[in-house]
Image (cartoon, rainbow, N blue to C red):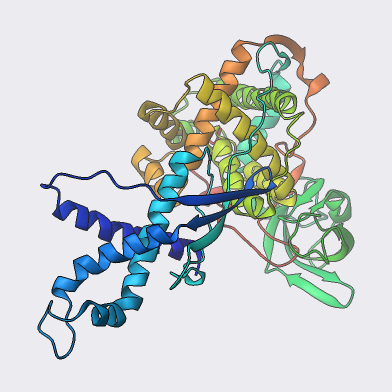
Length: 512
């Protein structure tokens, strides 16, 4: 039985009990007699507990007798009027049914009592195999389960850190370059007659092979000619050099190394042969900054006003990158002693959630889709290591939040959703509905809570302004990477990021 079925079965049993309790709500309620439990807890790792619970025979008989006492007056047994059959016949006829009922009640009451008497901080539902649990005819009832818990650790000192904050002045050259990138999304793609140049768009089909085996073949995809090609499970830093000067009909081959984090252990870290077949080469004709165009993309009255908006967007993106760098410094300091292991099952289950949370944060900051896709690909290539670091950070920040009474309220949710809605140019209610449908409200809560805790830590830190180029490494959030939602192993997933559009398909609002 699956975990969800386990929980559903327990909930059904609990609902039956709730109905029964409601029926007697007008009667004085007796305090439920506690169970006599023998509990053994093993700790395979910092975040795992294997729990064995033994329920005394006395308690098993007490629950059985109570159930048969309720059943006997209304039991229907062939040859007897309802409620008139001998108890022994009732027990024999309804034994299996009653045992199933009692099993559920004993499990629920045992787990509730366990929660009260033992200090667990579970981060998942208990993994119970209901089919393997039986009510014995003699002796105590024993069952066991695995539970993932928040690790126990000594909270590191978070006050008084020394942090370098990256600072950078936005220059006119920066504005020129960013404005060019922005206008490319509104430009018209025109087929190039000569060899491909940097930033041109190539329509290519891709094939990846390992030895004599073809791993995957893509349909024609449009990819911008940049130094690095980012895939979901590989990064090819020689892409720009390989494809330099191609024309339609050219075929280029290279070796690409698969990420070490892919589930396929035989191919993880292996070098594979990549073949790129060029169908078309296009370049972008940038739009003319006419009054009509300026008004269409954001109601700008002049090119100067547009440049001011672009400068503001650049400043916000720098501030976000700077805050991320500050957070990385804090995380390194707080997790330096977090040597506790995280179970692989937890990492795999949380990996997708952490990826979506990172994407959600970038979307709320207004980064364009192609930049977000590059970042998402980079995370996927090292997803388990990234998830392990993110979870350790989360556990520590959560402890600080508890100690400092930091929480998330409805206003916090509303403000963050409004910010995302503003960046995506859609009503906040649609953003909220999408988050709820995807089950991402909990991820949004964690994002808000962690940001509040980081602010608290920074407020107690010594912050030194430092030139950004001295402490910020080049990331995938730049103009050197072309990203496609495609896997070398053939598992294409375009659900994370909407595809970047150009020309008439582009958004009618200025991307920031």
